[in-house]
Length: 188
Image (cartoon, rainbow, N blue to C red):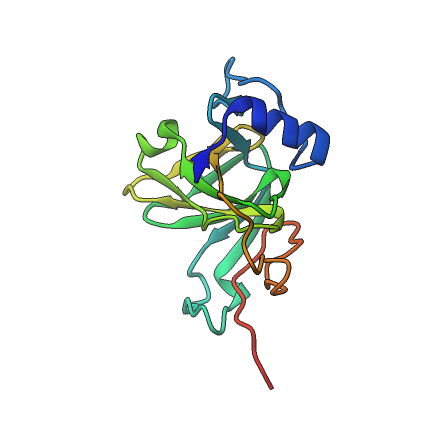
């Protein structure tokens, strides 16, 4: 399994729709950088945010997620409360090839401010906007800037295709758009 370079990412994005919209070079004038880099793609955060709040004394339970634990906001800047987190999504829509696994790492600009970005791996043939989890680890409010870089995606190509892809097993987050909250499948 190898990490894929800029030429491979560009080809897959432009000719197979792997990343839309796609920015062919790294943009960084007066913004947190985004676009194609040497061995990855720096994705942008959209202007849709779900800010965690405990106004209604909600309990965070991944099996029974209460939506009243979030406040929806849209705008150019999102302020994360101290020791809290925000859900957002990428501007870009991803279509992952069957022989590729994608790992996401946070931007150093945010990490150096105590803001951690988490994303689980994008599995083969997963498709959608990526839900981003921003954690503010500081005792101070922290800002996230919409339409600027949030994280970097690294593309790892397997030596062979997987037997069963995310699409094959009908993954619960397939084709997600917007900020997607946690789900647990319930079997009858």
